[in-house]
Image (cartoon, rainbow, N blue to C red; front, side):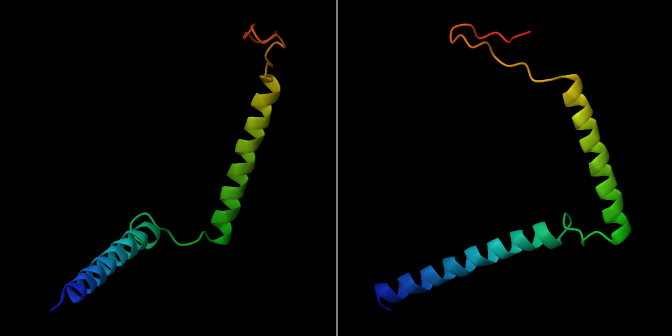
Length: 81
C-alpha cells in the first residue's frame, strides 16, 4: 500500500477514535451518573420558590450592606464612608 493509503487509514482511525471519545464523554455527562431527567411540576415549583427565597435574602443583604464607592481622587484608593 502506498503512503497515501496508510495516511488515510491512520487519519480515519484517529478521527473515529476522537469522535467515539467525544460521544462517550458527552453521553456520560448528560445521561450518565450526573445526568438527571427534567424536573416534574412539583419539583420545579419547589426549586422556583427556593430561588425566590434566595433572591429575597440577596436583596435584603444588599440593602443592609450598600456598595461603598471609591473616592474620586486617583491616588487615594480607599473607600468612602
